Length: 112
Ligand code: HEM
Image (cartoon, rainbow, N blue to C red; front, side, top):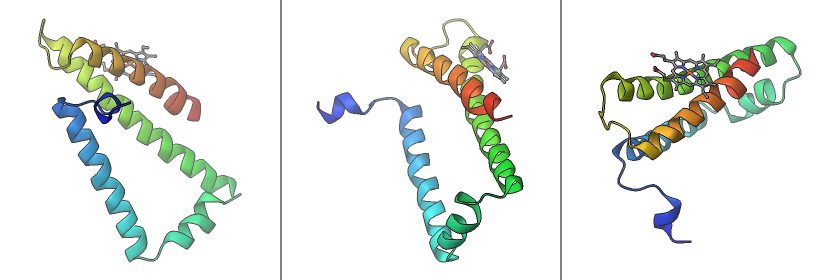
């Protein structure tokens, strides 16, 4: 499989998404390293058995997924605002419809 088949090319929204992922991931790694918080993150949060902390992590991840599904919803609304807008092409609209539904039900609703 060539790289061209693996990565979607020529879509500005997808390029922007990829750049955002790299920037946000780098910022998180930088901040955790700079403030020496890796051990704290692992011990106090990721491996905790405290039900209140687990509840807080559920709420935060549900809100993150609500935001992610919400961005999908916004993109669909923009596309549907006027006929034949072509903000998203047909394939991309179908993909966003699917991820919006899946993310909202499985990753957002099921956490609450
Ligand atoms: C708890 C689950 C869900 C929530 C909270 C939710 C939320 C939303 C919101 C806020 C919008 C924007 C509406 C607008 O501005 O017009 C939207 C749009 C949309 N959602 Fe969902 N959604 C959920 C599940 C689903 C599912 C399961 C599907 C289909 C598989 C779906 C398909 C759509 C479509 C097609 C639109 C665009 C329709 C339009 O904007 O007129 N949603 N959703």
